[in-house]
Image: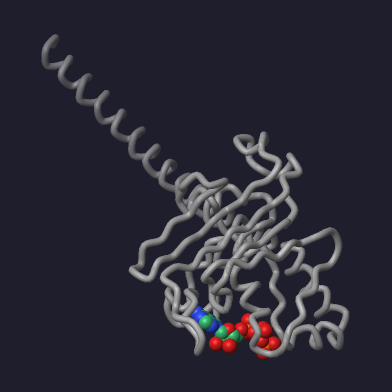
Length: 225
Ligand code: ATP
C-alpha cells in the first residue's frame, strides 16, 4: 500500500482543511520555523492510532485540536484522513476491491472520538488489523526527527545500518524473533519439567497397581481359601 494523501482539519496548526498529496518519489515540505511541518508527521502517527500524547509532542489527548490563534478561535474537533493506494497485495482480503483505502480519526473537545475505514465507522483495532503485516503502523513507520539527519550522515556504517534497519521495519521483526525464541525456551523448560512430573507419576502409578494386585490376591485368598 502506498501513501497517497493526508488531509488535516482542526489538527494542531491546521485549522482549515489542508491536503498533502504524496506523489511518486520524494515529497518535501518546506516552511519557516514553527509553521507546522512536524505537525504533519504527528498527523500521520495520530490517524494510525497513536495513543500517547507525548509521542505527539503534547501532554494530553486534546492537545492535537487546534487551540486557536490571535485571529481565530479554537476549533472543537480535530480530524485526519490518510489515504493509501491499494496495490492489491498487502491489504486484507475484505479490502481487495477498493482502489484506495482511507482511514479517519476524529477527536472532539468533549472527549468523544471515532475511527473509520473508507467512511465506515470502526474500532481502532480494525485499523490496527488492517495494517498488520503491511509494514504500516504507529511503530512501523519510521519518522526521523529533526537533528537526526545530521546524525545519520555522520554516523559510522554500523550505526547507519541500524537506523536504516529501523526505517525498513526490520527491527520489529528482529524483536519479534527474540520474543519467539524466549517463548520457545520457556516452552522447552516447561516440557522438561512436565516429563519429570510424568516420570514421577508413572513410578507411583506402577507402585499403586502392584499394591492393588496384592490386595486383590489377599482378598481372593480370603474369599476362596
Ligand atoms: P520547526 O521547523 O521549528 O521544528 P515546524 O514547522 O516543524 O517547526 P511544528 O513543530 O510542526 O513546526 O509546529 C509547532 C507549532 O505548532 C507551534 O507554533 C505550536 O504552537 C503549534 N501548535 C501545536 N499544537 C497546536 C494546537 N493544538 N493548536 C494550535 N497550534 C498548535
